[in-house]
Length: 638
Image 1 (cartoon, rainbow, N blue to C red):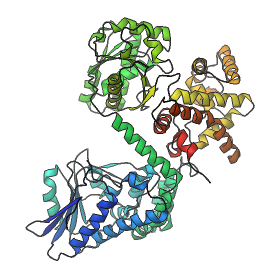
Image 2 (tube, one colour):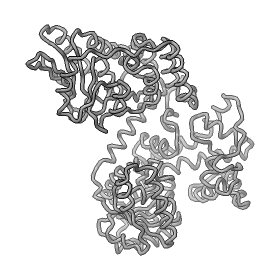
Image 3 (cartoon, rainbow, N blue to C red):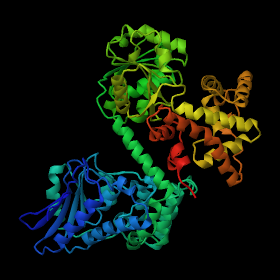
């Protein structure tokens, strides 16, 4: 039989070689058509009495199998349709496992989700000892659990505790750790050694299943619950709880675990949580793809050595760019370099690489780096007049093809560009604080911004390991446009008599990192007021903020704002409230954010609802399992 996604041949010793090479894809994914062909191929193998062994490898250099096709999951509408696809995969994997031949497979890169599940039916597993080799079950991040037999087969190989660690956290296991655990049986140095190692494996018996007592299993379940679920809430993301329920229901019996995946997986896949998380996965993939390309940037000049500018410079140097950092205040430059050193000590373990990063970052009080930089990033105070002065001073000295970028959080690009000889050179690059932690960058297009510069800025963001979302220049862009009205609504609700603690508890229960009142204190009530003057705010919120400013209580940074602060922690009761009241309150307070996201899409501030939702997830901390403001608001509920 001719196969589209598979090749099969026998060597002189009678060993059969299954090679997966999915057509039309740079990586192997378990599409339905791939599994259907695999089933036909296994039938051919079952009928061939001349085979002495069977090996499975990837036809994609540097990559094994990346799991199931997430896009195909999206077209499944009923539990019966999901179960039918599961039955197809379960059937062929079970037949592989039941072969009377010795079998082995070689993992040459990523083997995650279904990509690990396809390896587990083989008697022996060999992996390449490389940082690119990663094994794991990331399904929990998609609102599901392994559904092609992996929940049980992993227990058989590595025991309950380690399996629960993998399926409840989704973390990847590197090659050496996989060998230590028994998830793989041997390591080889490179891809050329894989076939020989697999042939050797065929001479060995399959490893014995891990034996555990009832006490071992009970202890592992209890430890996993304490370690991985103690801070989670079933009413938010039920996925890890349902996974643990699956293991408890059959006392972690390997065979029963595999057999009963069909009882839970279809419902999990079709749940609201999984719908949202799978969409976020696809949005993330789309953003990453938009940031892949050559920015033609090698040298970076940052103006302003405060927290934002210093951290932007440090991150750029850490990612391989040559960076100069300038400020009128030499002490500010020195302080930024000290912070950069501390960042590199935390993030870069290799001494040579850490030293190289430090060498790429140079203090430049005279501003000489302007003349050689490929991009000049201004990160001075959020003041229009100051920003205009900065760009007027550097434009003439900058290279003709150098990008001029402002790290403004709210000022329109057109206003900053006034007076420039070439206003098309100016774009916005809005980083979020703290820059080393938060992944989002808003790439802001002014009315005159050069399209090629915007494209290069997207690629530059990707090279910084950031997630860029392109926005049109308007007050607040996307994130602040959506965030501040939500904060002001919370403040107005508090002024109207709802306790601040109840307001914040409603949003924390919803899944936000913190509520709007505590967040306003964190941001700084003076900053909230200043942005509110640009974006507009309810009179009640404006009055409350002005009163706090007059009293000098600006939030966390002064030790008191709407709350008193004990260091980094707001002093609030964190009391218990009626659940239905909290849910209704959260919906009310999020309404302005939802509306601003809708208008951001309709007015073309962002390209589509995916960008609006992704920006709020990455920039505001809107919970992933809710799917972003629009994903949550528009989800059909009975």
